[in-house]
Amino acid sequence: MSNQPWFLVPLGSLGAGEVTLPPDESRHALKVLRVAPPDVITVTDGAGTVARCAASRVEGGSLIAEILESELRRPLLPEVVVYQGAAKGGKVDDVVERLAEMGVAETTVFASERSVVRWDQAKAARLAERWGAIARSTAKQSRSPFVMRTDQPLSWERMLARVANEQATVVLWEGASLPLRTALHGPPDRIALVVGPEGGFAREEAEALADAGGQLVSLGPRILRTENAPIVSVAAVLYHYGLIG
Ligand code: SAH
Image (cartoon, rainbow, N blue to C red):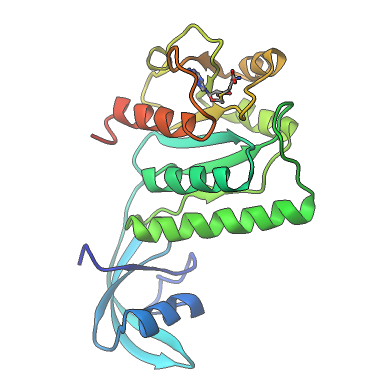
C-alpha cells in the first residue's frame, strides 16, 4: 500500500459510505494509474482523515469508491508554521514545496521594507492558488494526510498582527546573539518561525517583531540565503522536538 499513490478529496467527503474523486484526481486515477474496480486505493481529505477505499464504478468520468475503513490522524506537535519574507517567483515556490514536504503546517509569505516584490490583489490571488496547488501535490507525493495551509501574501502590518497572536515565535535574525536552540522551550502546541527576505530585516523591523512577542535568534555565523534559512531552521526545530531523525 505504501508505495501506491494517495488521492486527495475535499474536506467533508469521507463521511458517508462512498466518495467521488474530484475531476483531476479521477483523471489521474483512471487514465494514468489505470485504477479500475475493485482496486483498493488510499484517499485523504488533507486534514488528517485517511481512508482505504475500493473503486466501485465510474460515472461521467468520475471515479466512485466505497469507503472500507477510515481513521483520523492527529498532527504531530508542535505544529511548525513559517512566515517567509517575499522573494522572486520561483524561489518562494521552492520554499513552499520543501516546507510542505517537511510537514510544516502553514506557510505565509509577507512583504517588508527590503523585499523586492510587490503584488496587487489579482496577483496575490494567483499566488495563493499556485501555492495551494503545490501544497496539495506535495502532500500526496509525501503520503501525508495533512495539506500544508497557505494563504495570500500578507502586508507587513498584517503579518505582524498574526505574529502577535502566536503563542511561540522565533525570528531568525543574523544580528541576534541568542542561538535558535536556546529559544526552544516546551514543546508548545505550535511554534512560528519568521524568516526575512533576501535583503534581511531592517533593524526597526526586527525590533517590531520582538515587540510582537518574537524571540530574535541566530542560526550561527554564516548568512544563509532566504530560501535556505527556513529549511535549515525547520529541520533544526523538528529535530529538537523529536519529529524527525
Ligand atoms: N541581510 C543579509 C541577508 C539576509 S539572509 C545580508 O547580509 O545580505 C535572509 C534571511 O535569512 C534573514 O532575514 C534571516 O531571517 C535568515 N538568516 C540567514 N542567515 C541567518 C543567520 N545566520 N541567523 C539567523 N537568521 C539568518
